[in-house]
Length: 409
Ligand code: GLY
Image (cartoon, rainbow, N blue to C red; front, side, top):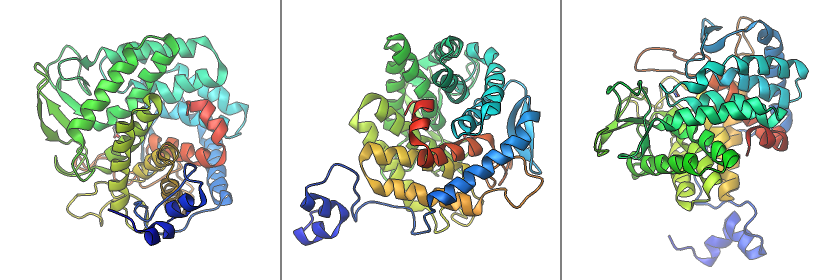
């Protein structure tokens, strides 16, 4: 598209060019944004954070395992953490960062320690989800060596799942089992920052190199021309040859599961931050523009943007929280303020329409998240990653420097 001088000057970017200020943050008429909607003030977001901390002060001390999902508004638990065990200690660490007090630091350390047996778990790709919000953050906040060493050990376990023929990290299944050996999922993009951490800490490039190869394979095979993505892509595990798109948690191989799209926005932006590779930034923008183009005026993602009933179908507020975090990071990386405004609109919508505030029973903070719609499992409930990324997004607005120290932004 060529811009006339008049068009250029009527956009924010054009005005910035004219004023000689391009290069800070800017937006243009061509930017894709969340639908127009209220943008909360800092006071709105502080009120949401205060609600979260108050809830966690009441609920937190009695929790000794890892929350997995709510049933009739009460947490159900896993003893070993399943794939979500990083989010409860992560939520507690972020509550400490938010100024919630020493009690959260103590609870966070105890909960993080309970994940210790998973350091050597080579049976899942979820080691980043498990160890980044917990042990990496613990190390950043306390400087205690055991957290750093444990996170690196988890990265050593994760790289064992790398398939050099296909240049991907296998998502599911024991390494000894051929079942799912060639199965790659979008969610793995969120596990890569643990590898970047391991390279940064050890000076050994092997971890980050695997993360880069995996991200490039994902970029090449998952991205459709319009920026949408499937949940799953299958490869021949022996030759590494691509087979085709698939899904488990989305509607179909050709649909666009909103949480997977959100993991992708966040994950590719992180990979850009860690490598400076402009292709990762371009990919993150394409993914974000697609998701933003699919938001409805309520600014809460539907569970799958291409499900037959979409957009009039069940919601996934956790996808909104993850996407808000990714968009705020992307705004900085791309120097496009429209992504930040879109994130604030989503965060406002979550604060206004998705909190558990009106329930005295609820143990979680964010409601209306959907775990697995095709399996009819967890429809508009609460999940620990919903709460974690909601608080992360709030801190991105309210305490950006403290958050950056805690999670390595
Ligand atoms: N990583 C699995 C999920 O997002 O549900």
